[in-house]
Image (cartoon, rainbow, N blue to C red; front, side, top):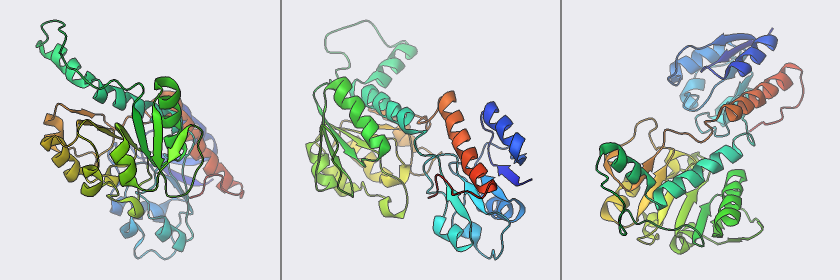
Length: 316
């Protein structure tokens, strides 16, 4: 039976299904794996089911010649914590779980958009602190999203799901930037990120992580935003220059931000925690039981395909 390491506890139904077909070792820690732990796992196990933050960067594969592991079946669509090229050189395949995360992540994007535009986080804190003294006409005036322009950076599955919700649910005009040409009903593709930023009331970042997109939203891109604009990131923390974002928020160059991911996650800069015009989530994108189960079952289907010698359905 194939020896499988599951690096973090997954939903009960997923763990039970895994145990039926694999010799499962469950890592009992909630923190991400270090590079040293990852290297050791590559030597000891036939397959590994890791997730966000587990350090399978290039250093994890250094000095390995014939690792036992032949498949890294990632739990999650993002795989920028895995050096896929280094894995391939050692004949290790890598898979992920696209599709299962799409709707839930898009829902969180809309939640962040609404909370930030309508200043809901500020209002919730006001009530909890006892500072609310009753309704008045100019209290916590925010941006009404209906009919505004939403700019989406990255028009993959999640970007399109965000666009559908915003266009059909809020009557928003959708413009977007994507590296390849795409025709999306009711949406207009523009030639550059800065063009989209300059024309949008709300920006949603939905790009994959990795070296090609690191700090793709930099100080120059943020400078294109108008002072009333709100930026939301549900993608990967390092696609956004966090220091430049903080500068824009503190100086009032943009109105607010909603963040579900961070550049040095789980570390969140103290200044972001102190700013009232920022909505902060603890990476809730796929945080629903049914979604996490679907992700787990998709990862197991990748593992089963490997076990049976079939083509991997979600190879990256």
